[in-house]
Length: 485
Image (cartoon, rainbow, N blue to C red):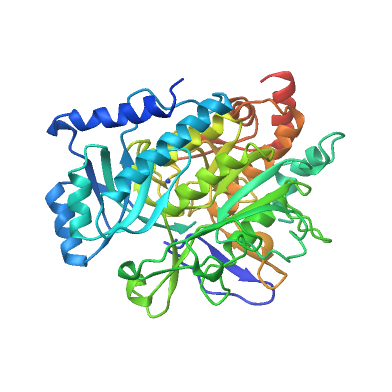
């Protein structure tokens, strides 16, 4: 199923399917080293891609066989930092610095013992590392007692004029002191944005790109100069327009905070934007198609979340928007594999900083499952409604969905400084991410749980298959945040 359908003004376009995770240094490293004395019961847990955007538990031999068959395999590796020794998001700076140094030390030691490791990705805030490895590298990881889990790196897909008044965001945006969310930022982890678009120009306060070069996987980085990681100016620019789906991040950002000189304003039209591009270009063979496509590896999404956490020390971030996903999950997937475990840890650390991670439920039209990483219980997971307050036919819907927002035929910014309509849970999600900014302006110290409760005790009740959720009403939620439900 396509994640989005887009129609530019004046013409119809075909459905777009885009393929789019207090101890000092010595104490932490000693704890990790102690893991080497553990028994074979601590052999790494292995997960392989199941072909549908998820993973399935597998044996060590199956992982070796996969590497032998394909020559190389991209993996996400969870490391043993030491039981109960990860610090919370509110630990003091010296403790967090010590933890980050310990994580970096452990990452270096593990990577140094993996022959032929390529495309190595390290994370500052969680004990994981990603890389591309051959058979020898797989065997080295399996035999390393500091390795807790090995996952095949999975690829996922990228999942106004009338919708902003519908949720009464415009009323709240105009309140004295709210000022359209000025001073707060939304992180958009997506395909990048058109930096010069009239709806977004002058609003971008930080940029990043995480993308993959892996010939064996058919992947080429879409970062500037094809580097795997960049924080330089221009890093958050949209991927090339010739690649199907590269308008996506621009459209999403426009919904959350666009402020053009026309009626197509976003939910928080004076908020700042932090744009992070996480997609890679894949060859037609890798796409099983006649043309190249774009997808995002979980390892790059983890990198973007890791960067978002680091930026909380320098920017007032209200929310992180992730209109992407894959797989089918009927229950919470927090620890289903190493990638989702890493994303869960980062979401929890961001929540500790007061930042909501808002994720699309997916567009398969299912009333039993939703996509990952929206299936993580700590995420704020969003489904789509129509402008007549019906659950959109394409929207995945189960008890893991937290909130609903308009996602059918939403007009917003697209490439070429134009505007176009698109449908999908991708479009519903930034309505919530933008609304989070307005709520933080009203109560800057409100927790993620506080704001989520305010949305869930107000709003329009919508239901499908016996499961009722609330379509957000920002004005009612703002009043509840101040006065109680």
